[in-house]
Amino acid sequence: KQITFTYFDWNENKQKVERHGGARYRVSPHALCWDDENYYLVAYDAAAGAIKHYRVDKMSRIEQADEKRAGQSLAAGFDIGAYSGKLFGMFNGRESHVTLRCKNSRAGVIIDRFGKSVPFRKVDSEHFELTVKVMLSSHFYTWLMNFGADIVIVSPDFAIEELKETAKQA
Image (tube, rainbow, N blue to C red; front, side):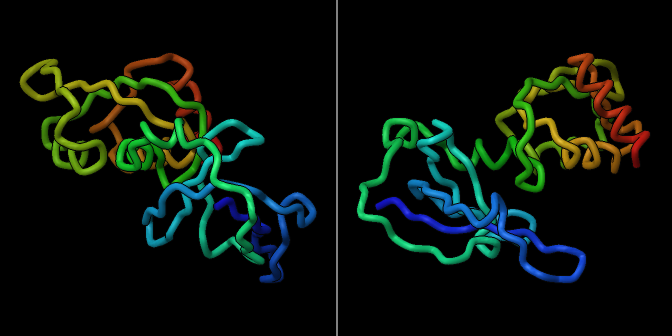
């Protein structure tokens, strides 16, 4: 069945503020996943025609609707591991293929984040490259900044510029 709920954020006074003026969200639940110490509901949003995710602890007034779940054909080919692997801190962004150049010593970090099935291409005796599909967001860029020059974006150019802008703002 579909569900409806309101979704909220916290303000500076530690009060709940409902998004979209308290309008109810209507989605077809697909899966729950855990990321960065939070549970997320992964669901099909028919109005947007897309899979979206919602922090469970920020959902309120959850109710089961009478309508059957929608988006079954999209959900049938949906890989929760691949989906969550593209996101950083479960923040959406522009989905893009990104090529990263990494020091060999960072192979473990890359495998932990993207899995062992992502192909590495040897660049030289100290570096390898890989191309991964990620959601470009400030969380992705700040994750990269944790590694300094050990992991850098090679392409696309717009991602390099967004990283520079994120660093400048930080």
